[in-house]
Length: 94
Image (cartoon, rainbow, N blue to C red):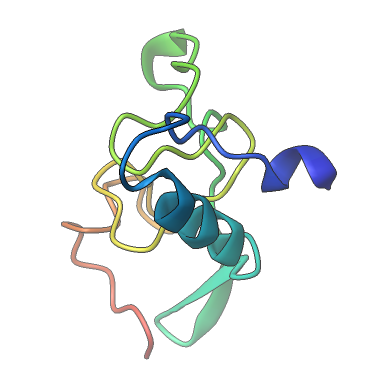
């Protein structure tokens, strides 16, 4: 579990401490409720589209491979439909 608490935030960047806290907090939210059913969230790197290996960290939220994305990340994959969480039509929270 410890490796999931590491952050890919750029050291010394202005927002690295804030981003590290956001990534750490996101690790505690492992499920989404979609259409009344619990779905395990997909960790960065687990949804390899086209078989390509993931980058060292998510280009949007900074999650490292194996970590959960920060809520609202443009890259996070919906566990119900396979689309992007921020733009799919799945009924989250219902």
